[in-house]
Amino acid sequence: MIKKYHLQQMAYVLLAVVALAACKSKHPTSVKPGKKSTATGIAYNEKDGFQVSKFNGQPVGPNLVFIEGGRFTMGSLEEDVVNSRDNRERTVSIQSFYMDETEIANIHYLEYLNAITRDSSEEFVKAALPDTTVWANPLSFNDSYVTQYLRYPAFRYYPVVGVSWVQANDYAVWRTNAINADLAKKGTSGSKKKGFSLKRKSKQAEGNAVATAETAAPSQKLGLESGLILPDYRLPTEAEWEYAAKALIGTQYLDENQANQRIYPWDGSSVRNPKKGRKQGQMLANFKRGRGDYAGIAGRANDKAIITAEIYEYPPNDFGLYNMAGNVNEWVYDVYRPLSHMDVSDLNPIRRNGYMDEAKNYDKKGNNSVIDDKLRVYKGGSWADVAYWLSPGTRRFLDQDSATATIGFRCAMIAGGRNR
Image (cartoon, rainbow, N blue to C red; front, side, top):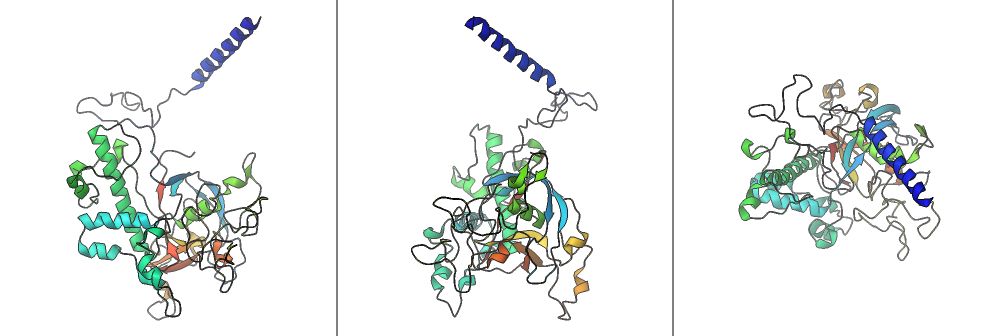
């Protein structure tokens, strides 16, 4: 009897497998394009024909987290205490993308400086150096931060600061080329090793592997069509950054129903952990709690950090992103305009170079405005900011060539060919 029962169960399983196989689409996909063109009927990969590389989907680059796209209400949900009225609420949709799970740390930036020292001009290397004097203050004894914060090993996994918007973009370009050079080397050598590595096996390879797009020979590079390299790392747009920070995926239930909106990258109106247990009441971000209060009282210092903290120090949001509020502000791609909400697209919005809102309309030359095409947005709040700036909808701006001790950055990347 028992044997008969097991045979019946196996039969049901086999029927289910057959049914699922029958339900699978026979249409070609990006991952399985078929052996010949559905438009011409001509076979792929024939001699002198159209070559279609094997592709198993976009690989996830180092430190990246997948952010599923969707609709959200962009804009400030806090009272506009500074009366800027420059980020009014509106509904937009964001395509799926990848974002760094952490801020770029000192060790990451030092890796970049080490690489460009070997293959770039002295002028470029000097231009890439962070401004360590951002810590200097004649009325504060911050001298040790000026000399040690970037290079002393104890600060390796603290977020890099003193980096301008321009320097952050240069880093993203180098990072793309460094990783893709490594991937291309593996792809052309037939290596089956998995994962990413920036280690070089010879002095010659060390000198050439991080060559930038301008200096690498075309024969040494693989095209995007190969599927063996990654799309470009870049700064996230303001809309992407704000969407990723709110992480509203954690507020969803049933079919597109949303339980609540979020003021911060976590639930609730407080900056403290509401969950019962040992961590109840602890701060969820690194910020300035009040005048002269950067961390709390010794022995029970609640937010753990007088200045910045290590990049994994605080709990991640529902997308798995660390420090999307506090620690350091972060550069985003957009040029600043106060009326961006009035005329940007409602699909993947971005403000670039004053399009439709030209800088000449603001009379900077006549000293009636500070706005031009070099002002860039930064978001997120920092170790030196009060809680108001931790809200993802708040925004500020700074010249793209300027740097401070409170601004860092992280990178983003398109998620090609996928929505989930």
